[in-house]
Length: 228
Ligand SMILES: C[S@@+](CC[C@H](N)C(=O)[O-])C[C@H]1O[C@@H](n2cnc3c(N)ncnc32)[C@H](O)[C@@H]1O
Image (cartoon, rainbow, N blue to C red; front, side, top):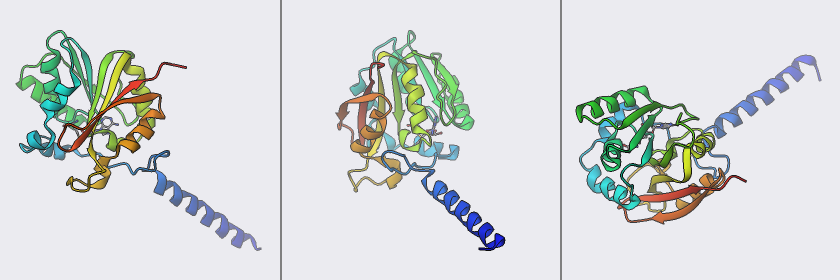
């Protein structure tokens, strides 16, 4: 084989490998689930839509979680603060809500909302794709409402989230039911219980409860396993 022919072969092999990496970059290495794109901040209007009360029953969801006054809670992927303000009322003046998001524009909307509603027990935390930037062993509950399916680095995020939980704390995911084709939302924005269990348990958690009381979403409650 001539030198130029060998060069073409090597270049083709590199291009093939790069293509394969690009194809798998957006999928979970254990479940094979495709990650959803992050909802941009212009989507904040959709988060605040009036129909959301009937579609998601957010207050029922929080009732089911029985969050005590004085609790320390992280709203991970808080968006414009739709859930944050509800959490802030529940934990009361003696509690704290860490409102985390990836997008500074979402956090600006959230900041304006808590100022408007004169809420003083919320700490805003700018996160990155692989780190929620929460203090270690600081929270009783980590809540991700319609967020986990968007994580582009779920394994790294779960490791950090585990470190931020107090002993006995809970990680809770609300996710649209992928098992039900009648639920009108794109497939990559839904999850099955089996996918969530497979992915989250691989990072040192145990699925301790699945609650199906909501109209469209699973409530998936995980506890961190004791350190080996
Ligand atoms: C569909 S919105 C839900 C917002 C909010 N939880 C609610 O229910 O109104 C998803 C949010 O997750 C955020 N997000 C996605 N990946 C994230 C990550 N790695 N860390 C923090 N936030 C993330 C997005 O920026 C977006 O604000």
